[in-house]
Length: 302
Image (cartoon, rainbow, N blue to C red; front, side, top):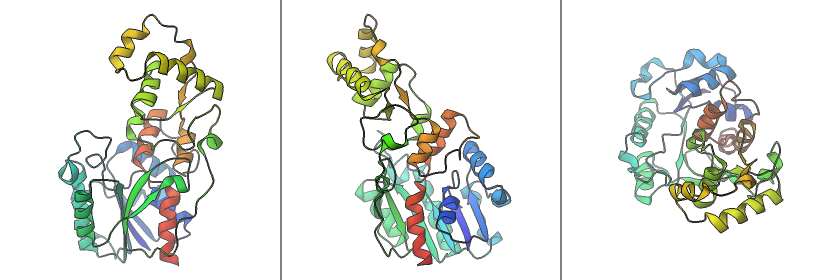
């Protein structure tokens, strides 16, 4: 197959094709994020010569017949984590129309587009442009991470995805989580809050990120202290109140490391080792859960 991957990121599509045992003749890709390209090139150097750069500048007349078009267009303007949430006309998410342009120009046999859950009005626009309704799959079925995503595709889905019994604690290098599944990885995980009390605020008050505690007992003691002293307060209010408090109970709390995040995205451990810890968190928050994509792509072979 000749494959064209738009918004390719760290080439999770290439990984999924390999897992699905689908032979690829040429894997063309469009990506402009330097750190993502570094990961893709380090794992699939054979594809380096087929990097097409900026999606808005792709000239499909230079490409052979494309059998499969895949991509996950930018989600920032759709995501509920974005308070502005400008939708499909937002500066980044409107790049979806570039996917539509190239879909119409290359006329592939199969296509797949992924994005976050969004307002119905925006979802309907995407569906109308692509001519199919999305499939909703939560990555928690195959990984230790919650990640609801929409998948628009014309690939035949001959079976439901099979649930794999895997929880977050089973993939931790060490420590304990109170959660059965990690919260969805986000690009913002690459901008971690540095003090344990601020980390706890983001976890308990704001409902973002995933924290790992030294033990179940450590989690319970920390949670009790936080609820008794800081629950419902703003970050600024917590800073003021914490000045005269003993915060030693918060020592030892941590974020997931790169290997644990890779496991959450069902990516081989060490796949992003060419990057720093924060840059790895950035690209892993941006990418696909590989086993979900693999399940969808297997419909081609069947």
